[in-house]
Structures are given as structure tokens and as C-alpha cells.
Length: 166
Image (cartoon, rainbow, N blue to C red):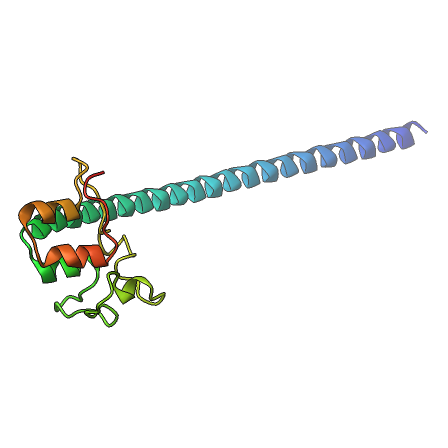
């Protein structure tokens, strides 16, 4: 009986040792999985931060370009440069040709303002708004009026400019 008891005790000890080794192995696997998941999450977070940083840089770049165009609009409105004003507000293409809906009509408002398929003057990322104020709250319309721009004034008015000074 003593030998059988010792054998039984050894079997129990061996079983307990096997369970301890199994638990240690499972704990090690769990730690490895947690480490791998932390690394993946860190990578994803860094990628998202990079994406957001690039998006912010792109937005700042677009804003700088828009402000440059806006400043140029004030200068050329004052100088009565009709075609260049049309390019900046989106009524003329790069060659200086008038867009399809922006033809001379006897109405006060240009037909392109009612055309849902024409995105020229309304696309602020590409074209400057006709009533965009500068740092002095002056508008292109007021600059054109001060400069005596007799060709540019009707163009701005026909395309929605109505503020002289904010």
C-alpha cells in the first residue's frame, strides 16, 4: 500500500507540475498576445496621427493658397483687370474664356448663379468668393469701386457681390 500511495502521490505531483507548466505556458502566450496587440495599436495610432497631421497640413496649405488668391483678387479688382478677376472668381477658365453660363445677358444676376451644374463661383477651395473680406473688412467690390474699375464692378455684382465693406 505504501508503494501504491507513493505512486499515487507522484502521479498527483506530476499532474500538478504539468498543470503548472501549462498555466505558465498560457500566461506567456497571453503576455505575448498583449504585447503584439499593444504594438499593433501603437502602430495604428501613429498611422492615424500621421494621417491627421497630413490632413491638417493640406488644409493649411489650401487656406494659404486661398488667402493668396484673395489678396490677388483685391489687387486686380482695383486695377480693373476683367479677365483675371473672372479667373479668380471662377467665371473664366485658365485661357480667359468666359464659362458656358456666364454670357452677357440683360439680367442683373448672371445665369451661372442659378445653374446647379456650374460650380465656379461657389467652389471656395478653387475660386475666391466674390464677397470675401480682407483683414480691413474691405471687399473686392469696394476695392473695385475705389479703383474706378468700370469693367470689374458689373462682373462682381452679377456674380453675387453685394457687400461694400463688412
